[in-house]
Image (cartoon, rainbow, N blue to C red; front, side, top):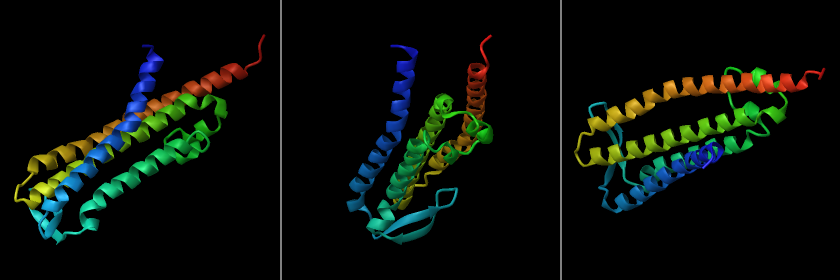
Length: 187
């Protein structure tokens, strides 16, 4: 398969993966709901001890997957709007990028969308892990290890953002070079 085909397939997987995680999350919530007690934990301390509980209800139990669905819809909605409204994405070279004609935006917009898709994967995975952790805590298990995983996932997002932002900045410079190179008069 060509490099472009591989990249396209990877990006397609990255766009579908968060929805698959949310589907697993929703199936988990549906499967577990009938076995819940009268109260569900809604907050834990770092040691995994329950610090707040609420009466079990559809809203309490299914709220987190619903917020995950809404978040993914927002991220993918913004991603779909980027070709016509690139100003919706904030990054360090944004002003420079917006001065480049739209015909040169493609590679930069692809990186922006990939960033939103990767963010969706991280958000969906975090929400699922938090929900599993709350469920386990409700059964008296102290899931301190899950706290560490969620913390590492969250902390690991910062370097990802920095790396992606630098890649987007490089893509802006390359797009500007292509534009300026093609705009130069032929001699």
